[in-house]
Image (cartoon, rainbow, N blue to C red; front, side):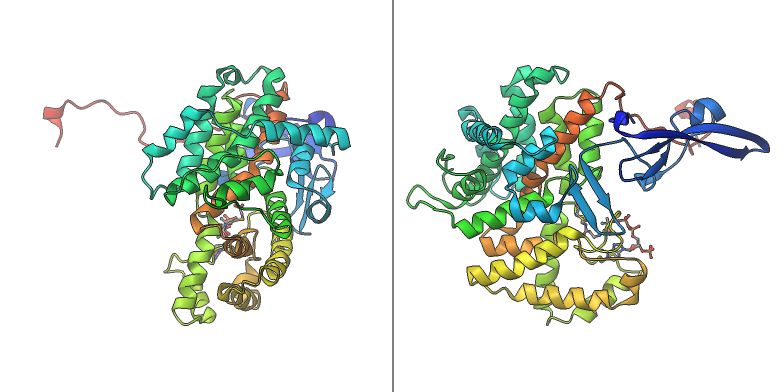
Length: 442
Ligand code: CMC
């Protein structure tokens, strides 16, 4: 896959001695050192120099790019956007400001933030023709199916954005996407419950507007509570980027073929939907509800998870990169406690979640495998308390992840060294054989 931002990385070299089929060769490979001293051997020339490829299914040990956007230290539980710790952004920033930071590489000044927010406000309406698309879906449609289709459909209303190489159009396309995705999400919810859609209101902030479109009706306005708006901002900030995860890599892979931003992000939304990825937040609530309905015995459930003949997983636990704790989970757990207290909505599922976490963290199965609660373990509890239905949880994850997808697409697109993503394979099928006419087959 293409690399980006190598100007930021130091380059050394390493000599590797390989013995392949009895032939020994010592070869120089560039060694790339990142700004946090992470080290990679650049094997782009491995095949040209040796005739062999590197095989790494699921990319557990493969860097697909260099990137200056997000830094994670999975052993130390560190997550930073553009160098700023997630804890500081969660406390002091807004989702809109964090989006600016991720996409533009630095915090905006007052004027820039005002202009950016104003543009997001001015682009919140979707084309009236698009409204009719919602009528074509059954009321049981999952909102992620609607969201991905609608985001891709935006490209048909802004055909100028089809040229992904036109960098002058990036700002307006990104603004449209960030702003309209909220409207699409809320419209899909309204469709699913049979209520008329609520249009955006220009007097409201980004997150307050989302809540208004979700929860107001033509008969009753919804004035979002300031505390609730703060909590939604925090949740979206915590989801805003997470470097080269499954959906972000999808956005980059699709974008590397020069697909436009709307299409690339629509693909990312589909990738996020799966229960191993962003779909886990919905699954966690289902799991907690089932445990509660079966008498609340968390140890019995953990026995089932540990039984290798079952396919049951502890949803909201485990992470490819975090092997100590997920800093987002810590912040969300704290927020869940205070949100439920402030909203005066105690949730018995929070108690099940806490007991489940406590039991798992004491259990050698989870300790040995370094499995900890991830971002999805407690987020659903807050979304429930705020009134979001379960099938909207992954949509909220997608809204939060949008600035990250956009920033990563931009970084990839602006990098002159980007090539189309095209992994290789090791073929394990039949060796050459002749076609057998149908009458001669046994
Ligand atoms: N419950 C039970 N066992 C688990 C779990 C879990 N949640 N996660 C991993 N394991 C076990 C796994 O079975 C394997 O055991 P063994 O060594 O005996 O075969 C070992 O731990 C290593 O797991 P892995 O499958 O190699 O880990 P991975 O890096 O490929 O997968 C994961 C990461 C997040 C997909 C996985 O931990 C999982 O399925 N978790 C549950 C789903 C979930 O919460 N997903 C949200 C991830 S965070 C938000 C996001 O990025 O979307």
